[in-house]
Image 1 (tube, one colour):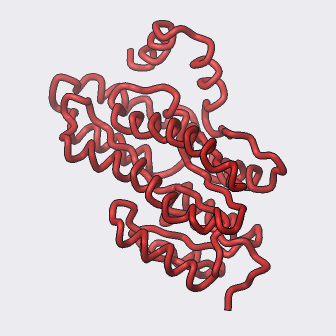
Image 2: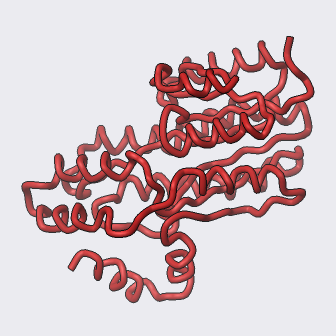
Length: 272
C-alpha cells in the first residue's frame, strides 16, 4: 500500500554527485524517494536509507515510461520531479562528433523534457506538483571547450521558462536550480573528454590551460544544491531560480551587468 501521507519524489541522475545527494536529502526530509539512474548498483545507499532505486535511462523512452508507471502503480501519486541526470560533453566544437553532440542534448534536455511529459498528467490531475530542473550557471554564459554542454543548459533554461507559464494554471511549480562549481566527478570527466577530443590538435594549448584551471579553488559539496532544492520545496511561494556553489552568484551578477565583449575578456583571462 502506498503511504499517502508522504509526498513522492523522483530524482533522475541519482547514482552519483548532485542527484544522489538530493535523493538522500529528500529521504531525510520525509519524502518517499525514487532514485533513478542507469547504474542501479550505485544507489545501494539510497535503498539503505529507505528509498527506492530504479533503472532509468533518460535517453530510452521505454525506460522512462516504465519508471513512471512503476511509481504510479506503487504510490498512486508523484509530487516532485527533480531532473538531475546530465553530464558535460567537453571538447572544441570543431572536434566534437555530431553523434556526441546529439547525445548531450538528448541527455541534458530531451530526456528531462520527456520525463516532464510523463509526470505532468498525474500532477495536473492532483492539482499540485513541483518540477525542479537542475541547470547550471553555465546556462547563462558559456566557456570555451564546453559549447555543447552550455547549449544544452541554455536550452533547458528557455524550456523551463515556457513550461512554467504553461503549467502554473494547474498548480504545478517549475523551478530552475543553477549550481556553480560543485565537488564531484563531473569536472574530471569533462576535462578528460576535452583532452580526448581536442588535446592533441589545434586547440591543445587551450585544453592544457583548461586542465590547469581545475582545482585552484575548493568547490563546496553537493549539499549546497540539495539545500536549494529543499528551500524551494518548503517555500510557500518559491523563487523561479536558485543559485549556489563556487562563484555562482558573482559570475551571474557579472553576466547580467557586463557587456558581451567585457564578459568575453573576463572569461578568456582564465585561459591566459
